[in-house]
Length: 175
Ligand SMILES: O=P(O)(O)OC[C@H]1O[C@H](OP(=O)(O)OP(=O)(O)O)[C@H](O)[C@@H]1O
Ligand SMILES: Nc1nc2[nH]cnc2c(=O)[nH]1
Image 1 (tube, rainbow, N blue to C red):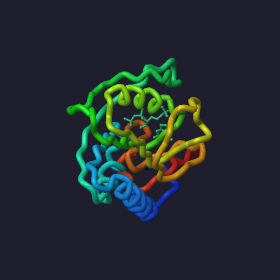
Image 2 (cartoon, rainbow, N blue to C red):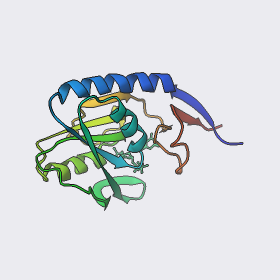
Image 3 (cartoon, helix red, strand yellow):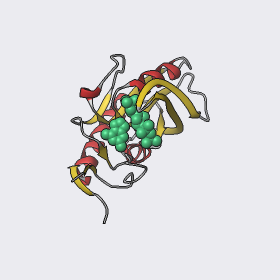
Image 4 (tube, protein in one colour):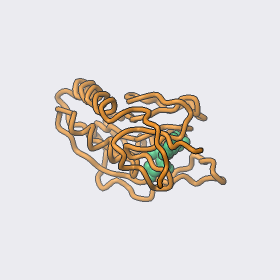
């Protein structure tokens, strides 16, 4: 019973990479407080693990967005389903995502957040699928892994809401 999942990045590989990202981010924000914004739901697992590896002071907020899609294709118009609880004006913001695919969600979201006048804003994603990009204005500051054009699950990423809790990144094998 259940789908077969092929491991793409093991728990150990993901943990190691998150530690490296945590070190880089801690250096960049030395002397500052980093205000981490998690894009729900997929970003939650990465956000928690990354936050534990950051050594400068951290505050957190959460946001949920959905794309107005035409069919299955994202239009890139982002509707805010749950907005941030706090203002980001004057803060050093780090947006944390699980995956960037077409780039449409983040392109739109970063514009919305920039209008709120943060002191700085960076984007960190666990996974990036550059081959799928449809927009060219998404600047990714920190990437865990670049992945090929396969549908990945685990570490926050779902398939029909399942598999988010897998402690590794994998691909659902269809036979
Ligand atoms: O680059 P794009 O093509 O715009 O796709 C990326 C978006 O898709 C995923 O979210 P999803 O809509 O699956 O929501 P979820 O995190 O709640 O599963 C991911 O977390 C990004 O927000
Ligand atoms: N779960 C999942 N969600 C996505 N959203 C965009 N690309 C992907 C993917 O590969 N897996």
